[in-house]
Image (cartoon, rainbow, N blue to C red; front, top):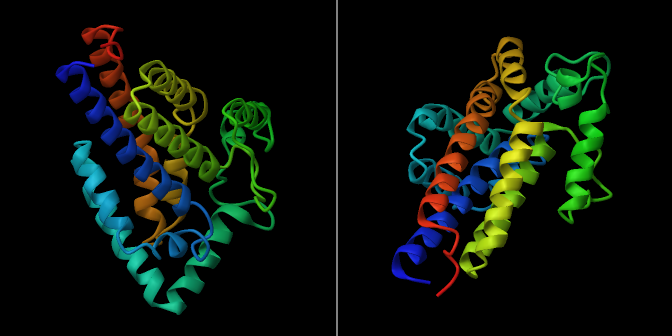
Length: 242
């Protein structure tokens, strides 16, 4: 691999890891606050990595939303009363019982009847299985829950980064293609509506910035993937050859 191609592979690997950090933030953010974000915060470098990832990717338009979310996570981790209140808000918004303010399931927004466990959920589960990913037995959410969809994107990004690092260009390009199709099929079609619904349903300092991030990041990531795939095409398909 010549210097130009090696540099491109290194850049692609770093960007894939950065994108994985942001998708994992979203996955944890839309889980239960006491189980997701508090767990992530046990790693003292986690939020610093997310911040650096935003800058590496040039996503400065999201920096305000991330700063608000970071402040909320710090509150969550230091104030038990806040944690309890936001856990109740999570239940009201996403869990129920009964109708919820902002359903976090793709099927609700894409199924003609607005029902859960629709075709989108079945297709998402098939995509997980095709990638060798099985839902853990303790996972109670449906396959098209926004937390699982974004966690799967984080997984694909990490696999892509590993492929670039070991010089497996066809595998890395295939994973990029998988990410692009998964975004188109399972995130871009409904997250703008979910974002708007969530933002109108809450004044919570935790969920308002999350609404902004889930509404904007998948679209921006689609554009990032397109640019990288264009760069790969312009340097030729022989990037992995000596």
